[in-house]
Image (cartoon, rainbow, N blue to C red; front, top):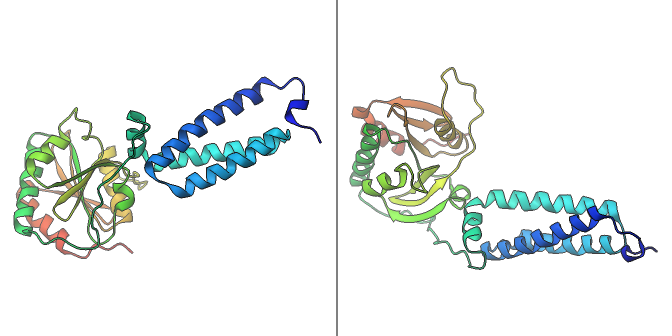
Length: 260
């Protein structure tokens, strides 16, 4: 049996690859521990042990195969937790804690007052041509999207929505998700729709359509070019006149918009 130290000389690419995997792997282990992802952490630990055995016994092909597979897993986990990754880069050794949102119990609040706040915010965003995308969660949970954004967990107010979407702030890119009367997360990014449209839509509108294709959520989009207001529901985009916004909003929020 031939060991890695019996091979002379050890090629530079093996050394470089090994060092990259070890350094990146250690950093990634710290990252997984901060976001408390037990499954990927255990998987990568086992993979590192196997790759170490392959390296010691000079099993180059299995070593490369496992290394590539580990790298893919790291990329997928990082992408799926991009919000947590940003916090990790800022402070690698700080535990990332997120406030839990009770999705099981619907909080009782003044629906009419809430609707007026949304109308005020959206109409003012439209007048100032401030681009915005606001998603209102209904029956289907959006937790998988919420966890990849920046937690807010604050009551809805027009002023807070103006601040979030004000150009230049770190939260203005991406969508804001509202659960009940609470803004739970901002800077949330959705997969863009792949539907072909006769009209050319920008990324904000395509993202709104994209989330409406996979959930029963109601999404309001304000165009930064024209100030036009649109609703994205069930994979369709409907422009609405500002004077009719409140009526259409109340209708969509009260309807059963479950997708098949």
